[in-house]
Amino acid sequence: GLEGLVRQMPHASFPFIVSNYDFRDTVLHEKTLLYKVFDKAGIRVGVLGVGIELQGLVPEKLFGATQYLDPLDRATETADLLRHEQKCDYIICLSHLGYRYAGDRIDDLKFAKGSRNIDLILGGHTHTFMREPEVLSNQEGKPVIVNQVGWAGIMLGRIDVHFEKNRPNRCVTCKNQVVR
Image (cartoon, rainbow, N blue to C red; front, top):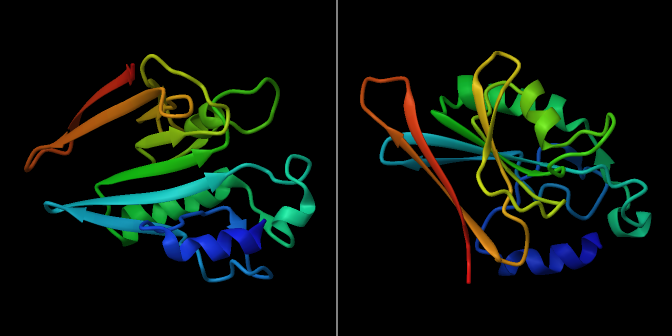
């Protein structure tokens, strides 16, 4: 549950980033980040995270008073802040929504199509093995790369993004590789 996670957080060498859970009335209050900006060689990369609806999937005693917020609404708001206020050149969403579901349940594909300002979605939850990333058009007709590489390190994904000075376009190469 949340208490166990809080006990393990000091041992992590990375930030806990989540945009669509409100932990205000839990032990995780003020222990996660809404987003993180990384500066690499003059390129600003914004990272945000979204998670699944916990109710009905996870026993309530494990998530307590955590409030689930619409992932698309929260990610859109956060990505807008990253692009315009934080001046990010590239925005990555770490998703634990799942790759694809039948019906109306939000998944990475629906999320990508409804998104704005997100360039890359690295997904999880459904453990989908993709041979190569899928490129979809977002709400504004711009490309969004969606990738998921299964589970347990059986497959690794590599996405290289190349930026050139004075050019708004970027070259992206993607490759998923089975580890043997």
